[in-house]
Image: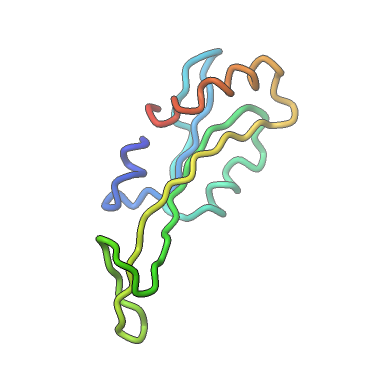
Length: 110
């Protein structure tokens, strides 16, 4: 799933993952919206959730490898950035929170 997030052509802009059992991370959800949609998807979570979303950094007249046209027809450079986060629900167990702190990188493999 992380590969879908990294690939601009898939349209996937965010993902979340959760534990299945005590140690296996599984995909919970993906979406085409942005950060707000991603965070809304975990608003009612009662567990530890990992997630990631894509953001675009725009460089006005900067030297980057990709360009987009602005309304005035001028080209601006842009770079994709990826935000990885961990959400600990207040009622998640202490053990789940502790285990999650060592598993942050595993969401990239879920």
